[in-house]
Structure formats: structure tokens, C-alpha cells
Image (tube, rainbow, N blue to C red; front, side, top):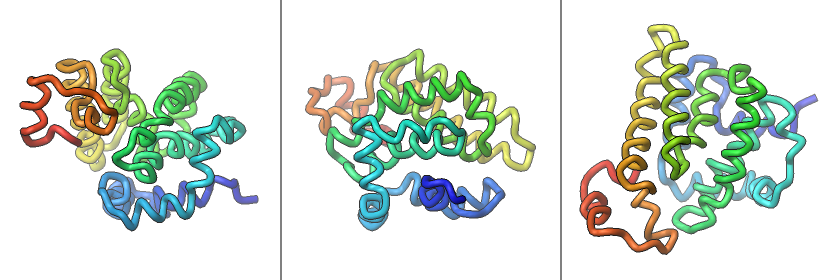
Amino acid sequence: MTAPWQPLLEWWFGHSESPHEIAADKGKLWFGKNDRQDLEAQTRFGDWVDQALAGGLTEWAQRPDGWLALVLLLDQLPRMIFRNTPKSFSGDLRAQALVAQGIAADFDRQLQPIQRVFIYLVFEHCENLSVQNEAVSRYIDLVAQQPETDRALFSDYLDYAEKHQQVIARFGRFPHRNAVLGRESTAEELVFLSGPGSRF
């Protein structure tokens, strides 16, 4: 019997086995900003996102693959469906708690390495330095566990985690979120935002 979350995982990760092939096929979905993709996320999975944000679908978290799917519904899809609104971050706290619980149960190590990227990305999204440090540590371990042929790909994910960590270490928050969240930027943040690589 097909698990209810399987269509979401297939949409997000495809069917390839090689992490390079998966990243090449799905990278624009993961990290691009595309109205068509955002609409597809809403059309196909918007009801699930609403349920997840309301505290539902908790039974999914009893298995590693279901746990991964629920994390995506709380962390990744709101950033697409509610892009440029405060609601895009509304699942973050629950996602962080869910990831911590799953890691404690060793669920992350039962996933494919490329899937684990999106588990640790939840920590990377957090405006808390200790959580950022945890994200970097997890990515360091993930890179070290990869064969040489895959290490460069996963090193890129580590590089982005370190960049997020540096921003939080400097500002204690992500300045690029200020406008969306109605926060006033400091003079130092405005200078930072005027430069390249400040908005991820």
C-alpha cells in the first residue's frame, strides 16, 4: 500500500538514485523562485500544508519517510505557497521541534543523504546561533559520510549552512526577512542588504 505522503516525496525528490541526478533534476524546484512551481505546490499540497500548520498529520512522524514529508510541509512548502508573507515562516518552530525529535530517534540516518539535506535545512532556517551551529555540525558529518564522488555536492550545502551561520552570528537574525516580517532594519543591516549574497 502506497503511503499517503509518497506523492509529495516523489514530487520533491523524483525517482533517481544518484544525489547528483536528483539535485540536477530538482534544484530549481528546491531553490528557485518560480510562480508556476509555487502554484503547483499550492494546488497539489496546499491542503496538507494547512493541516500541518494547524498541528495535524502528526501520525506521519512515526516513520522516517513520513517524518521527512511532514517536515517539508512545515518548512519548505510554506516558503513557496506563502512567499513574501509572514506566513511563509509560520511552520518553522514546529518544524524545528519535529526535526529535533526525529534526530533523537535516529530517523535522519535512515534517509537518503540528499533527503537529509532538507532535515538539517530546518536548523539552517532558524534565527538562533546555537541552532545554526547544530546545522553546520550536521552538514559537516553528512559531507564526511559521502563517497568522494559526492562530496563536492554536499560540500556546497555545507557552504550555504556556514553562510547562514555567519549572518546569524553577526546580526542575530536574517536581515532579508525584515521587510516581510515588518521589522526595522538597522543601518548596518541596510548596508549588508545592499551587497551581493545577502538574501539567499
